[in-house]
Figure 1 (cartoon, rainbow, N blue to C red):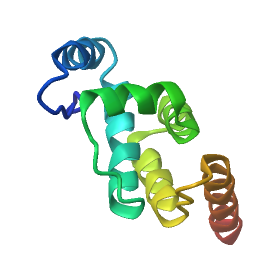
Figure 2 (spheres, one colour):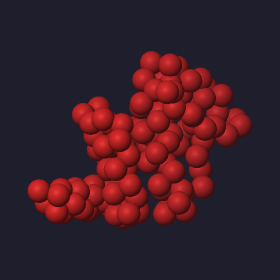
Figure 3 (cartoon, one colour):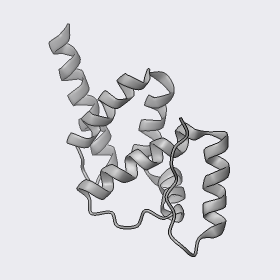
Length: 113
């Protein structure tokens, strides 16, 4: 299923880039939307334009982490990890956010073992 790119008016060029990316790599757009949705909910991110999506893809370490996760696991596992990430948010320190997400996942897998 292709991701749904969001865009504000006035950034047509970036919107076109997102549409092309969505056609070539739907998971890239989906993951960016997921990270932006978490930031919108927990970090008061208001700008969900195509420009912000491109910035997220280029600059947000959490996007890179979640993209790597998405490429390595089944969709259900990705959703589990996304849920863990959403409960470990550090709006000001993406590396800490990644570290806390990994720790939470290790704890949950140790309980299962």
